[in-house]
Structure formats: structure tokens, C-alpha cells
Image 1 (cartoon, rainbow over the protein chains, first blue to last red):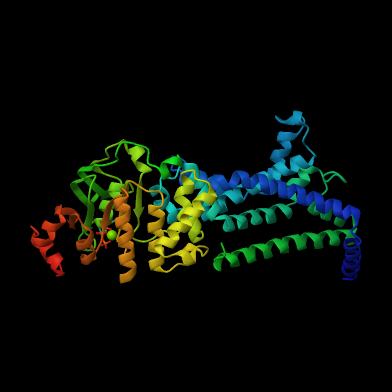
Image 2: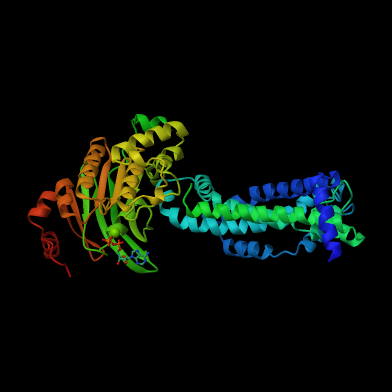
Length: 234
Length: 247
Ligand SMILES: Nc1ncnc2c1ncn2[C@@H]1O[C@H](COP(=O)(O)OP(=O)(O)OP(=O)(O)O)[C@@H](O)[C@H]1O
Ligand SMILES: [Mg+2]
């Protein structure tokens, strides 16, 4: 208990003096996860809408697979990406292993199914409303997708934030493909696990506080968004 | 593409619309038909009939929203070209989650018009139809009657060649109904062919040039309005006109 208190005190000092190591780690965490969320959204949002608007043979199967992929264990994703990117793997020539790029790739794989699946559900409900109107107005397939994405944007933003929440707290995959290299691929979660192992509790707790702050603020944003949704502020 | 909204370049007429033996089915069960019917270039067709007689299904079949299981629905031009020149006002208004102005402007945006111009046009229409004060309100929160007005403005804003209306005045008070009728007649004068389902006998008498009377999923009687109202041929139509319950 004493250690926790001491740790908290030291942690506040680190945070308020804007410790450079701390800032660097937070910065990389944000960079990796935000980039991953952006890429995952670019893939997942249109994919979710596309799955609603198009009837094709394996649509149901695709949706089932997508939902199953949401449950992918990050460690396994990390392992697979590791094997793909390692020197002897098929993408070894790019030398991406143990770089932030590798971490982004792993997180994109983890987050995309989640964003696609949530946006699919959101868009499916909206499509049920809009179907006749969009057909009647002779909207092209792409125009339909655009209208659905735009009018569902609040709920879709929630999907993106959920993706961010999953990415920022994830440790299994980025540990494996990033390697937790100091000043290079060290992020909040990997640093916490390292510093804890070293008995460096102050730093670990400081990092933990920042991580919690990020997660909580994301949840607050989600909450306030869903409130404006109900209050019809579009 | 935008140009065609301002000045109709000479193009082949979309009408007449011909239905020959057209049937609508749901899982093999017949809903409507077989229907043989021609919607000519001139006039204003009113579709009447008791609840569940197939008015909505017939209109949807003409518009291409209801699959034609048997028979044919043919426009004067290839179906593909006819699609973009029709509009439909649904029995239950479909409101996009947008502000009134952007909802009305939507068909123009789809046709490639710039946002600013489309919005300006939309607010003119909103004024005209009595939604001038509601421009920046979210469309889903309008009243039932206001939603119907929005639907009508959204349908007329791109000057369709034909407009299908499914009980567009069902939720409107007397004054609003008259205003809407005036707008409909103006659209008609501007070259939009109207096909409208209604339960309002007075409205039917005021507007119809010809009548299609639906009964039990079939076109039970059809013909010029004058003849229909004066001397209907079938017992069911006669009772319907008198306001008696048709069994
Ligand atoms: N998708 C469907 N599945 C099953 N039955 C249907 C379907 N669509 C319509 N029907 C049935 O077909 C019949 C005709 O329906 P329709 O909506 O065309 O009637 P309507 O004349 O427009 O009635 P109202 O005056 O109440 O609007 C009804 O009995 C209805 O229940
Ligand atoms: Mg109906």
C-alpha cells in the first residue's frame, strides 16, 4: 500500500513536470493507435456500409466471419504479423519488424473487424429506413453508401472510439511486433509491463494514470455523443 | 446533368406507361394483379379503393419498387433512363436524419448540383410549401403533416416527369390540403404527370381526370373521372363513392 502511495506521488511529479520519457511514450501510443484507427476506419466504415447495400452470395458468411474476427486474440495477431514481417517471412524485405509501422499493422488487423462490424449494424438499421427513398431517387450505389455513412456519422464515430479504446489498451500484439524498444517502439502498455517487472512503480503508475485518463475521456466522448444523438442535434 | 434541371432539353417522353398482365406476389402469394393499365401523357390519375385493396402495391409496382412477378411494366423509353425521371411520395414519409433544408435539397445533390445552389432552391421550395420557418430543424422531428409537405417538396424539386403520390394529404388539415392541391396543379401545368392514391372523395372529384378503382388486389373499374363519379359501372364502386362500407 505504501508503495502505491509513493508511486502515485512520484507519478504526479512526472506528469506535472512533463517528463520527457513519459511524453515520448504517450506520443508514440497516440500516434500508433490513432493511425491504426484512421486506417481501420477507412477500411471498416465503407466495408460495413457496402455489406449492407450489396446483396451477394457470401454476404452472410462474410458478416459472420467479421463478427468472429472481433474476438481475435491480439497475441495471436501479433504472432502472425511477426512471422509475416520477420526477415524470413514474405514481407521481410521491407524491414518493418520492430518499428512503429509493424505495430500499426497489427492494430489495424485487430481494430478493423470491430469497426466494420459495429458500422455494419448501425448502417443496417439506417438502410431499413432509407431503402425505399434512396431507390426511388435513383441514387447510385456509391451515393447510397455515402448518404448512409454521413447520416450515421455520430454512431459511426462511436464505433471508431470503441476501436481506439481497444487499440490504446492493447499490449499482446504490439509487444511482439514492436519489441518494446526504448525511444523507438515503447508505448504506454508495453512500458507499464516492463517498468512493473523492473520494480519501477512510480513510472509504471504514472503511465497507468495517463492510460486511464485516455480511456476515460474516450468513454466520456462516446457518452456525450450518444446524448446529442438522442437530443437530435444533427 | 445539372442543366436538365433548369431547362428540359428536348428528350423522348417517358410516357405512356403500360402495364400488361402485371402481377405482384409475396412468397408466391398474389398481392395485386393481373393489371392491364395505361398511364397516358396527359391527365391526372386518381387511384381509389378500400384499405388493403392494393393501391400502394400498384403504385410501387409502377415505380419499380415492387418486383413484377409476372407480366410487364413498360415505359416509353428504356427502364434505366426512366428511373431518374420519376418521383414518389410515400404513404409513410421517410425522413432522412438531416435538417429540413438538406433533406429537400438531397435529390438535387444526387443529380450533381452544387450544395449552395441546391440549398437555395430547397429553401425556395420550403417557403412555397409552408416550411419556411423550419429550414434548420431536424426533419425527423417535424409533425406528421409537415413531414408530408417535406416529402412533396423533395419529390417536386427536381421536376420529375411523373410523380406517384400515396395519400399525400392524409395528415393535412383542410387549408394545407388546398395549398398542396394548388402546388400539385402547378406541377401538372409544368409538365409533371401525377398518379395519386387518395381516400379523400372530395379531393378525388376536384383533381381527377381519370380514376382507377382498386378492389381485392385487382383493377375493378377504370375510366374518365366524370363517368366514374356520375355512373360507376360496378356495385362496389358505387357503394364506395357513396361512402358505404364495401365488403
Ligand atoms: N410485403 C407484403 N407482405 C405481405 N402482404 C403484403 C405485403 N405488402 C402488401 N401486402 C398486402 O397486400 C394488400 C394490399 O396492400 P396495399 O398496401 O397495396 O393496400 P392499400 O390499398 O394501399 O391499402 P391502404 O388504403 O390501407 O393504404 C394488403 O392486404 C397487404 O396486407
Ligand atoms: Mg396504401
